[in-house]
Length: 409
Image 1 (tube, rainbow, N blue to C red):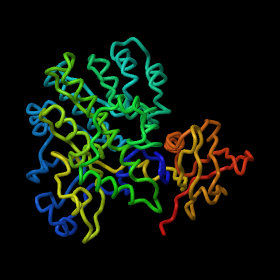
Image 2 (cartoon, one colour):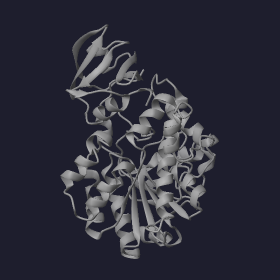
Image 3 (cartoon, rainbow, N blue to C red):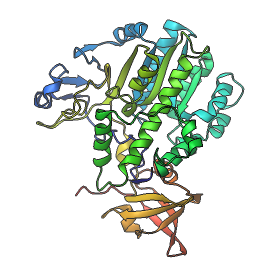
Image 4 (cartoon, one colour):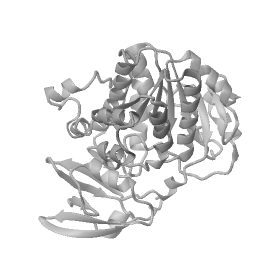
């Protein structure tokens, strides 16, 4: 992104929930405080599946019966949550059991230029090592491949097509720097039609953008990137399903929960292009809700149904240990990242990083754009260390950073 505090997220990965909880939480007080959730269960347990329209709990076979009426089923995920991916694999196996090879999978994790690599993987022509290397998994996605291994192994074993959904790194970088209006004509021609006019989508994204400690910057460019991200994924799904290869196939779309919640991310954009029936399944990390607090799935300022179904999962253990640097950065020139602000009480401040410092490398890996910093931080746990080489007033110097939890102010 062009400007942001780094919490080691991609766009809208900010929705991940942080508290570890016991098996069951009673949330009746919170539900009563939010008028729009009167039909949602007041008590939830890990493993519950809720049919959101009616508020009724259903079992997995009942959920699976709905698949017959859809061409596309979106299964959201919390990227670091093992249970999210186990549920996705469960849905994939059910799809295969019901529809055989007449299915395909779309994955946010892969960028469109690497489709030929995925094809080779499915056809058994390359190794897992080659798949990760040739799709630049570590650099361009960064999450533990083990979380996705079951899905990709199953797809390979059954010869199920896997479609790369995501925008190329180069285009994302250009939008982050220049915004949509600032793109060259040649770059604009590479993009599908991008919708930035959805009122509630903009409200949702802005609420997330502003909801982080001292986070500021160019929201319009941030929003442009979010819309490009989602419209490109929608375009990828639509093109495949309307192509001879995808015609008549059932499609499973695996992506972050934030891209399917309230339907206005990817699902609405695909429907606009194709008119094909679909369902969304949101994987919800169960958390305690204080009395009087809004339910996170039913904010009062977004009066929309969050999903067709909600699958309740444990919170991810990793999220409480995630590394936070505590700086605002932006791209300058072609290959430089500069620190614009340093959060008080942060690892960055403790290490002596200053406004105006240019980040050259992290642990020996060259930094050319803000996304490089984000990707590197995603691999760090709380308590880890990082050597950051910076340029300060023309002088190169190393800075050793130790990651610790930033106390709330």
